Length: 159
Image 1 (cartoon, rainbow, N blue to C red):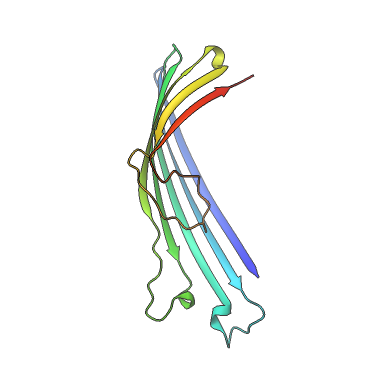
Image 2: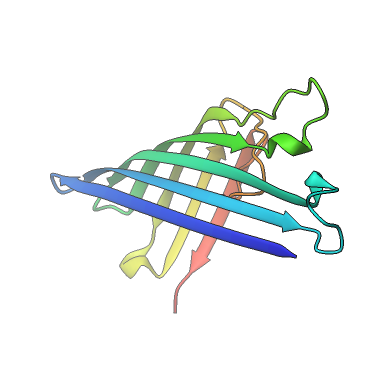
């Protein structure tokens, strides 16, 4: 028997600076709890038959945008992720060390051009500029984060 609970809180703040620039920040915290209960075994005889694992993920996003009236644009981002894990102490072997979460920054940059009325957009960028890998537990949902430096080319059409 599995019992999963997820609670999340997020906030964002965005500000236009003149006609071409904007900046923003966003924060999200997600707490997840997974209880695993093997009902076939009595907990008094097998304490590991009822375990609870918890994870808390903090996400901070900072960004700056430049949008030129000519159609050129650029965006830079700094994203921070920090995860705290709490394993059920019964799951740890004698003398075991609990798993640690992860704490890292990821930086992204993108430049491009939007055609008339934004009907088409062509852009290129570099995701995870520092090439920082991570080790997040899947217990808390998180966005698809690149593990290595990744070049992105995008063409978007709107009808």
